[in-house]
Length: 372
Image 1: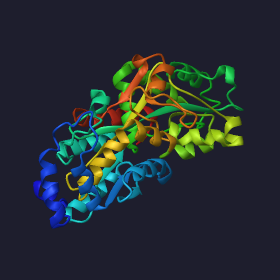
Image 2 (image 1 turned 180 degrees about the vertical axis):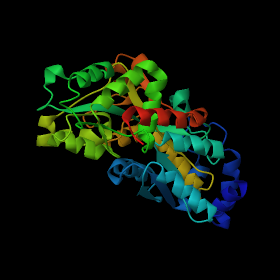
Image 3 (image 1 turned 45 degrees about the vertical axis):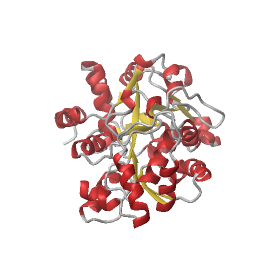
Image 4 (image 1 turned 60 degrees about the vertical axis):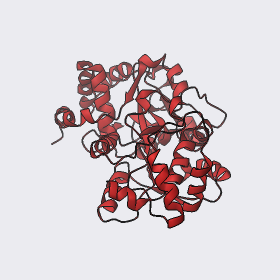
């Protein structure tokens, strides 16, 4: 990995000396200070930044606009990929010594856990490090860019508002009462083929133990249909094909509330007895070419200004203490307040120790839903 890093820093003889001196201090904290002129100058000489992420171009636009207002000489390019594809492409490109990402952002927690085990994350300490709690910094150099809530949604024409649940226990009771009527008409992410579905369900099982499995047994009676992304879940709930969906990304359904049809038909709620929050990781890989520019962007994304920009792009800001604005529906801190405190938050953590346990979990989950 040292050779890959060294090759990534060969961006010209003028920038090389600056880059090498930067590399020696990457593991040192620069808390509470702005970026040094040397880092900014090195980033300008690099002149570009390539980001692999599962954020959309719309999500990135306010961030890049704000970043370029500060650093106009750095051309930022983002590639929107699947959650695990971000990692898979990086590994394939570094294996062939091809140009690859300078910065990586994804909410595929299991893939980040594998990256931690592979030791391919640059252990850079951000200037914003002190603003984030330890759960939001799962490994040296790996930070949390957003805290994505996965919620309950329903069709208000099919499930009247005064019967809508705001807890997993309440939703399970409702499904139990209507299991025949709602046959094949509830939806979620599958745990056996979707990395987020696996991570969220595993985190809920870890928290609730046997109670989680009782809920899943109830859901299985209604024969749910699973989707690979949140967009189709929201659209099919709005159309009435599904009555409800659980563990649906806020980024998938919130924009639809702004439309006349979606606003009239789509209901939603946090789970006040255990709201899943998926931590979206951000890190500089050791194979990066433009490390100085990546360092500036990582710090900007984690800063208060960058987090607000990310929120304006439709992603939930993770930085503790930030509150919603006219343009930002909610933040991590406001979700904590809405569900009654941290005790009702289920963080979907990035933890390599969980990797060996997941195969047995998937087999039990598949058996519960009759999937072979």
